[in-house]
Image 1 (tube, rainbow, N blue to C red):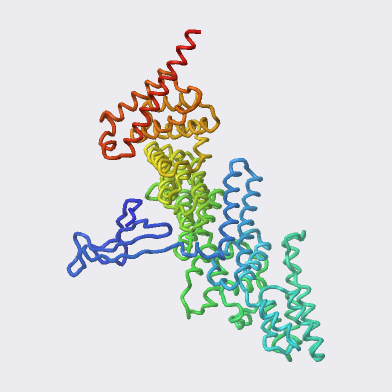
Image 2 (image 1 turned 180 degrees about the horizontal axis):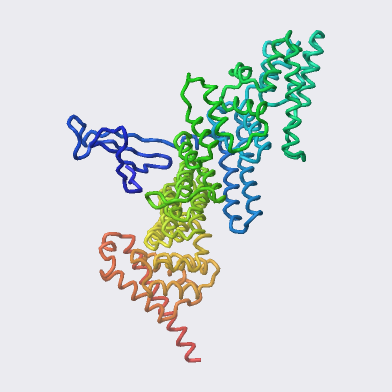
Length: 627
């Protein structure tokens, strides 16, 4: 069982019997372990501590949905950019930047939702980041918001327009109504032209209704007219619509008459289209569009509550999303965050919203009971969820980096849990740890990878990882394996690595010996026999060679002893003879020599070779002195 990361917090929960409580543990990324049990003082009949109820609550399951990858990846870039530039800006430039960040987040949400219409119901709540701006312009944002969440109309339009006679299609007037309910006048007028063409008797009515739609005043973002001018034009237009309705201009066509009533903001006429709107906030926006187009942000809460009551009609209770939206309309920021945290299936929305509000200085920062603030707590939870994904964990690193209180601790704990399935992934994790000077994690990763490589008999990789970990004991172990393989095969593997150990060979005596012994072979291969002989003798007399390898070193001296030119001097030969006597005198491995005829034969050959070389060396040195 995985060891728990944090101390449990005992919480007495409302609705739980007296004497009972819940222990909350952070069990894993995106998971909370809740143990419900009886505690001392429990009433009679309660289950004892031996029979607790255990629940594992999973919060971030949709982290693994492929369709949300775009949302997580692109919003990560926006988040990081905001953190880096926040300190550089102030005043108007900072305000403009924060508005831009909000728009960027909304663009990402829109793009994601357009890519996944089939999941609109599940993702609907993540798209509710509308801007509460000035009167007049506010309605444009609300309309845009509503249009984003009604996905069926486009399919209906295609079906209607692809038919032989669109105006006779059973869904024709439904589509026209939806366009009107969403304020999409150009689309509605286009469909009405189909009706005028197909039914000459309706042509006059269609022309009048088309004209009303065309003349409807709208305060656009680039419009220079004042709010007062707009309201005056809207009043004249409203009176014109009223006059046509009272004159019975559309009496012979119930569909057009209903549309005219909608243009006048008739609540009953709008509510008759309840099935086409599906949500109370669609009804709210439509009602505002045709009754209060210059609505101010502070007035939204009153219209919202009225629309909710009328739309539900007391038949249904508000959904969690309704509660969230009502809190937003009332500008209850903390309540929005609280309700979203409860209702939404992941932490993406609340984490980014809270961070943005914190940068705007709109979120009163207060410490939670465990010492963090709300922004950091939500970012930590979101980043922890990202770490449960095989590739999104890399995004989580940056979120932890920008949590000043506990980010470093969380990163250290989560980085250790990443499964190092490949060397490429291990190197990614390693770079992250090295950049942040996480020395313990660096050593741990290197040790894990070294052990994996060793189990797979990849000695070169294992040695490389152990050197990177600066693990002398493990480097010694792998060096012994290299030497053992050499004894069995007569050659080294991974020569490039061994040839380029450099200062790394000083990590352990055995690694130093391995590097120097390989250098001996290189010198011998290059026919630099004198240098090779000195190095070989040094390896034995400096006592850095393992005792079990002495016989191999002495045997390596044989080809040098047999060269035409005298390689070992008399003094060096005496040193070699002393090493051989130490080996055979019982100080090192005498028992093995007695039991192994091959070893005995090697000893006799060495003694003979040493004697012959000594004689040659004495003669050579005596001749040089005599001359």
